[in-house]
Length: 319
Image (tube, rainbow, N blue to C red):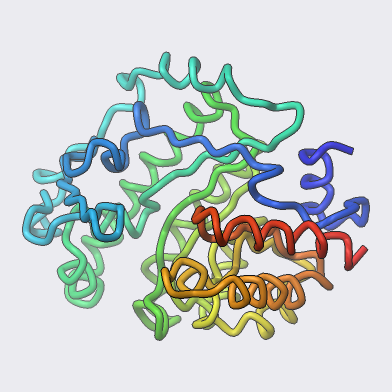
C-alpha cells in the first residue's frame, strides 16, 4: 500500500489503513502564489496581493500580515466602490498547469494551500479592529461583502479544480487567539459560519476533500466548524485547545493534521527530550481514534530527526 492509498483509507475512517500517516510522507503541498495570489511570497517580502491589500513582511516571524491603516476598504458600507475583485478568467492559469504537471499523484495526496478564507479576506480588506466593530455596527454591509467574497472564492474553486486538480483544498481562516475565539459562538454562527460552509460545500461538490485550517483556541467552536463540512482540520494546536475533549467528540469523524505544540517544538531552547515527549503525547491522544496525520511543526534538523524517529516507531502502535 502506498502512502497515498493508506492516507485515503485513513481519512475515510474505513478501517483499511495500516499506519498513522505522516504529513511529509503522504502530502505534497501546492503553494499557488504565482496565480492565486492571496499574499506575497516569503521570498518577495512585503507587497500587494491581487485585491490591492498591502502585506508587511516581518523577518522576526518569517511571515507577513496586512499592515494596519493600509487596507483598501475604509468604509464597509461603501465596499462596492472601494473593493476590486480579481477576475478569475483573467488570471494566468498556464502557470498552474505547469506546476500541476510535476505532482507525484501516484504516491502522494496533493493539498492546495489556500490562504485568506472569507473571514480573513474580509479583515484584510477592512482592517482587523475595524472588521470586529463592523460585525456589530454594520452587519448588513458585512453580510453583503462576505457574500461577495464567498461568491468569488466559489468561482475560483472551479478554476482550481480545472488547472490544479488537487486532492485536498485547505482553506485558511483563523477564528481564534490563544485564549479563545475572536467572537462569541452566536456571532460566529451568524456572521462567519454560513460563508465558510458555502465555500466548503463548493469544494466537496467539486470532488475535492475540504480541510479547514484555524490557528488559536477553537475548542469552543468545534461543533460549528464540524458542521461547516470539513473532513480534516489543520490546527487544534496544543496546549491552548482541549484536545482530549475534541477527540472524544469528533475523533471518529474528523482528521486532525499536526495538532502538536508547535510553539514548544519551535522554541530554540526546547530540548530533544521535550520534543520527543510532546510527539508521544500527541500520538497517544489522537492515535487510538485514528484521527491524526502527524506533522512535526518544525524543520529544525536537530528536532526534526528525533521527532520523526519517534513517530516511525509509534505509527503502527494503534493498528
